[in-house]
Image 1 (spheres, rainbow over the protein chains, first blue to last red):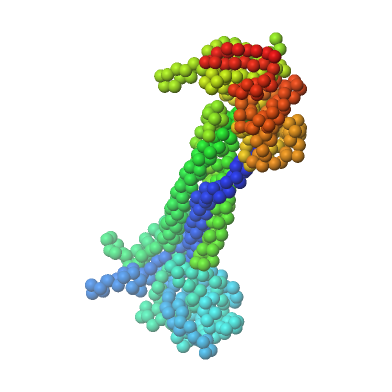
Image 2 (image 1 turned 60 degrees about the vertical axis):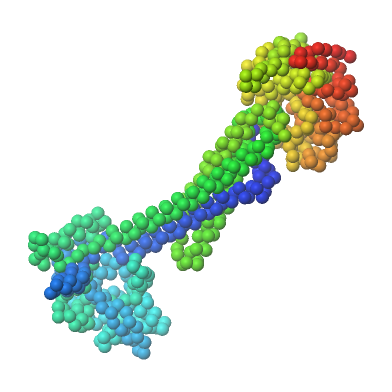
Length: 408
Length: 227
């Protein structure tokens, strides 16, 4: 018997009991829809995290001033001003695994333009920072080395700052005041969105490092920086670069033996990789939970197929008497089960996709539906049909034609 | 020679637990092509068991059965299915049509398992329905047909693959006397066209349509008479 005919018979059998077929499918529909939606939400989460990793730049090590103890009072990380612009330059010059390094300062201040004002983060930076963070300007120019050397009163604005100070006006060439000092806006930075910690990276103003140190800070140590951002030559060099930075700074700060260093290094990508892994584990877990509902759906299919075999014993007897081989009957019932689960699978995929879209609309959470997850879901629904349809089909095929014909 | 069916020394023993029941105790007879045979007997006489063996639905415990010259004794289930498909046509007491299926598709069923193309199937099924006088009802579902019409569909289904023998198991058991006469005259006319018919019945007047009557009792043939 050809496949087309088998399919036709199976379709007719499903049509005969529309309501029952639908209810049987429901388990598979819900299971597949859940798998698709969960996978979409899960991979959406990993996508967000990987985007955020990309937004801080790749292969980054953060060097922060260490904790200091003064009179028994420990100040916590970043509490001292032990890192200097010279440290940053030395790291760049002397560590072979390091590609770039930039000292940065950070302060919060009011920025004034005309009658508008906005409180934002003022970052001091060297030109390398924008390469490390892969953060270009969308208009104007970036900060150059001569700006840093000459402590020029120029600044770059983040998109959020532009939106809040300039009402659609072009900010390039305009004067803004930071701590009463006039700065010329030379460029606007590309929008970067949220940082992995959830802060708005576009809500910041960048000024040349030297300018920040000399003109904006009232620190008794004008050469100090709040942090040094270091970029390793490649991902493989990350650990080596961290070691080189550590030993160089220990040497420069004369930290010997068991003395606690006055700085700490943090490998940012590593932290985020862990976050990404945990989100993957989460989506795997969600997928596993959803698969359980698929198995439950499969058992439902088996149950109904067994009922169907019993109900149609006479039909099986007729078919056998007329010349159906064991194999024909087996295929007929197996096809019916697989058709049921695959139809359920298709409906589930549609519903799951729709569900994921709704979730991403309402929660503004990106969802990713991959062709791969759809293929897997579809094949899996077919496999459920084969697995749970086989036993009832074999039971049907194993019937004795005489008994089957006599069955009331 | 010319025997389409030849049974010799057929025995069938059923074993239920530790009990043995011998339904057929050494049956031998032959049926020539073109015969119309009625198998008669009370219930429990072994006539249904004999019919199952003739229909290749059951295998004898001992003895030889030649169908159209082929020894079906050593065949497995799938080979028997193929024999049933090509050599035999079945007509049952309860019609045994597929519900919610048009008449023509019921008739096509044996051809489906024979692996014929759908066009060929349709052609042959329509011809068979015409032969039993059901032109115009081809696409009615079996539930929309009367008992007599349903039995005609069943006969068309038995005919469609041009079998060596048509086996009818109490074909008129569920029909009133007028319809019985109708169906029996159909069998008679098919038989006149050269089709071999073997029919099980316990009604004398139905058996009277047949040219030969074999009577069973307690698993043995006690009478075999020809007109």
